[in-house]
Image (cartoon, rainbow, N blue to C red):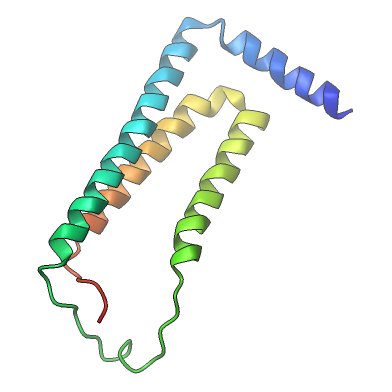
Length: 124
């Protein structure tokens, strides 16, 4: 039963990859996604260098509550969401794969630029 499902997915991808416009759109989506990851990485390095010049911003409420390290949840949660959406796209709806790649590439770019624009330094 599982092998039949993967045979059907393989056949679906085989048909889709024969269409030239789909392949071009898939390659553009892959380039947008890879470029977005590169830009995000470069902006995060730039932000770390730039953030060392700023003082941390105090907050009335946040200064009085204990802090917890949620970096693992922040990083791996984002990765888990991306992986689950890509798995759904590639195994259930392969025809929307180029759209999904372009959409998430733009999402990563927008997220990277907004993180770069915040002037909050590292915590004390």
